Length: 231
Image (cartoon, rainbow, N blue to C red; front, side):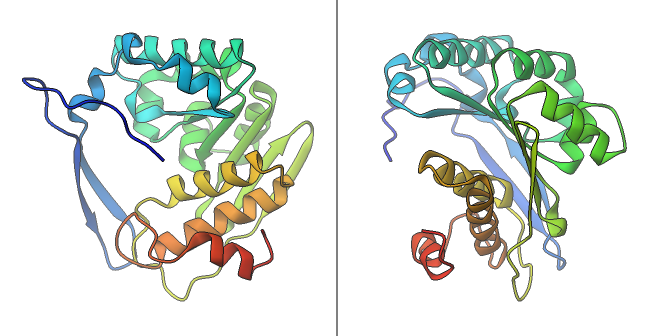
């Protein structure tokens, strides 16, 4: 992994987030996006996208017009290079603000959609998860929908794969669970694993992160995956 963006002077500071975690493991985030919101279409690295199997777009950054242009540019570069585009909806409030534009982006450019239950039902303006899932399956070729303790549902090519959660002794902090699920799933997908195994890798990574405070793994995820026979 490399981060090659040069530091800047005289602009907005680095993003940060104050996260409050309640005894049941749920978290409330007070996030300052900082300079992240200044991402624009001039900062898209076409060479890196062309070298990657999948470009992963984070819905949190979709607010500003320049950022939306950067999303569309990144998707166009990926398509031209024969790469896939993944989008995570990130937050139900973000979906509420940009529903029509998200739907257009998903239908036109997104190959892999990640969303939790509240985000996908918000996207399709329904309280019925199953109805929202059916619509997602028609709008993108691969929808990966997480449902907390109910596990996840993966929809692709008329196939529906249900993946159970990985058990944990106690849910300590759910911060980062969605990100780690996506990381595990995309690793499995790019490694050519079946959807069920990719989903189990996502569940395993999410289970590790919710078992302690903080959004970085404290255990070797590859070792955990091998211990479960997933790698």
